[in-house]
Length: 138
Image (cartoon, rainbow, N blue to C red):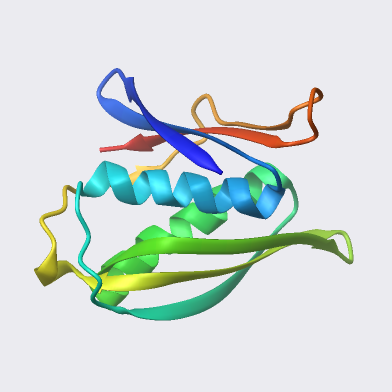
């Protein structure tokens, strides 16, 4: 699982690859956290959540949007992400967890929102892994 930050006009983008759909979700989330801060202390405790959506792309959007929501409500920077994605009863479901580092313990820049602009979530034909590209509004 890996990610890279990409420059994007006035925004920032994260490009990630992983062996599974859940791992690519987590890699994008790790990239999102890296776009907000360069260093994270070992502080904070884990929290869990679940999101559901009608498509994989909508689920990725909702997953990342939920992490931004958790940041704003809990006053923490979500880091060290873990995600498991499955299809159930015609919906896509992600069960996620992250460690919430208190914002007063990090110097973080604000990401306003996740966008659908240029979003890509695709299975790589060559090796069966996954690729994601997500733009964030800063």
